[in-house]
Image (cartoon, rainbow, N blue to C red; front, side):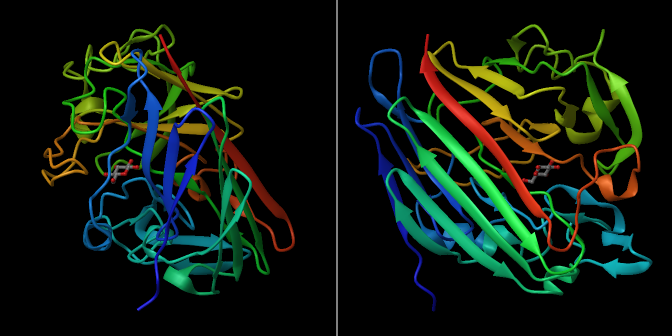
Length: 329
Ligand code: BGC
């Protein structure tokens, strides 16, 4: 019963980004390929109803705390909080009705669309009223800036990211196994069988996780490796040491995307569980049909004192940003 709007930010060259106030969802990113043809490089559905029905978080902002929290239970200031559990025994991407399934207030300013929402105290089990703002800006030089701001009236945990599924050859154009990926990280967090961090931070050296020199996403995805076996592909958090987060390139279309962020980690998820549902142009989605690069706090950081803290104190300002720059080669 609440109206949902789609906004299209078109830049001077005709490239555009479409976003919805349902889940702050990025529904389309149309950028030129090497022949100058506009290509939609992110996956999405054709109707709003499909966004409501499905649980793949396509293009959405996930929160209040993206990724997993073990058993959905954590302690803060001596109080134990119980979150909604929606991924086996654990909490994933904000719970049963997370930020991706909410309708946000929206406003427009220049080449930006701003979304705002008040997440009430107790929502999905989280403490504190959280005032959240997400701003998307698309510039004339094909940069998509994602800015996240939040304030709380009681201590809580916050981890906001966007869950876009990229296929730089164009959505519906096969798998991303031939995409060339670079991630500068020298280490990543080891997963247990539930994709929760064990707490051990492993070196990428000599493993399928070494993307420091760019390589095809699919080169080592089938390697005999216990970490890859758990998630049927990559589903891991890389530890970043600066703003440089990742670079992805499709040799087929020539579209390249560079990601910078001030967040401490990036989740490489090779869409291992993508359901075979028709996408925007009718082609069926498929496992490894896209790649997510979710800039984020470390998963389950609230349970690991040596990970950067996801705690947002009452009155403090949460301010994070990620920038996607599109180019051709
Ligand atoms: C997680 C995956 C999960 C997926 C759901 C990713 O961010 O890392 O484990 O299956 O989201 O779409």
